[in-house]
Image 1 (cartoon, rainbow, N blue to C red):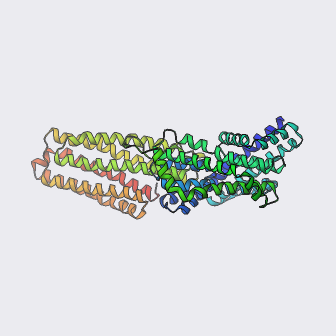
Image 2 (image 1 turned 135 degrees about the vertical axis):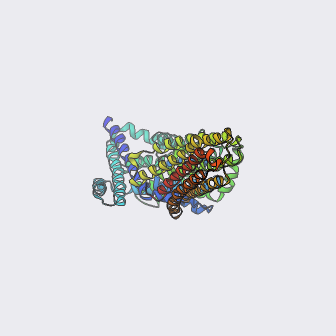
Length: 536
């Protein structure tokens, strides 16, 4: 019995490892499509359903896909009505895997592993190596199935085990609950299906017992999503409740229909593993189709159960960063970019505000600008920590570059904030404290320089927000003009000193430092633009 147990655990470990590798390969190959999908979500129910299927196929886990949806709703990226159709589709994405493992191709597992490893090792192009990773993962899935199937073979002659399965067949509710518990522990309904099909390949379970196991695995996949909803926003809590209710109602309906499902599925194939895979598909697809026409009404029902309270946005805290998305780099980058745009808005306001203080001597704005710099510093630290939490071991070269690109942009924005708070503000305070009055020409030059720098910063941020390389290139090209403008303004100021203009003489130090700091701010705008065009 010990070796049977070790074989089951070892086979399950290989199966789960294969799913992980396959998931990494699929995310690296198709992950860039996820961001496009999210940015073009439609209210069309069928498109939403298809989106859920695609996300689960890419991530290779309906639980992870559902948890990701909770994260996206929690950060405000998606609305509840958009999410419900996608949520129904996430479960359907697992049916393809179940159909594949029902084929008795485990004898070719080692061949698939060799092909995958060879492609991963020798592939010249990144996409070839990613496909190698997918094949390697599929090979391990089939190898895990083979190990599990062969390890349970001795149980055919084990009287106690056979009696236990017979008793479970007569108490289907107990089988359902046991399956739900197992799925909650291993956090994979697909793995539960793999184990069930392995038992079926050895003739150890019947279709009558397999159906409550399928229903239990469907229900058990809710546990991780429920945990993801703890401490989340009310909108995210509605998604976790929707996920639970969708599956709970579906399980109850199909549990009551079990005798009819058995009659229908037995006609679909004479092969028991295939019957189980077909039953799984029927239950999952049927569950989705029951609720799909009523997603809008269901959303209103959830809003009544969990009413919305007024939530005040706290700028100091991250709004979009969610650890639930870290397993999907493309989505994590998308959320980090949204958070970076919050920083950029604060930086823009700082750059605009400091000139208002300079021209109007409005000291009340100084505290606001310093407070905004603290916000920029805090959010910068949080974004940096978030990005560095993404595992570099599983990142593709392209994803690794994206991490560094975003970190560079965060660093540049933080430096702009520091230049304003630690360099520009002291100069403005000096102007106010010493009642310095600039010449009309001097004020005009500083305002002109500031406007050029501010416009270039806005264009750099806009280029990042829109991923517009043409706009970014304009920022890069404009650097030379601003550099030359700074030199020109220095010369004109020195000319005023030479002709003995008293106001220019009294403000000379502040004047020259101001235009120098404005130039340094533009250097960081230039750096942001370079990151957008991929030069960093």
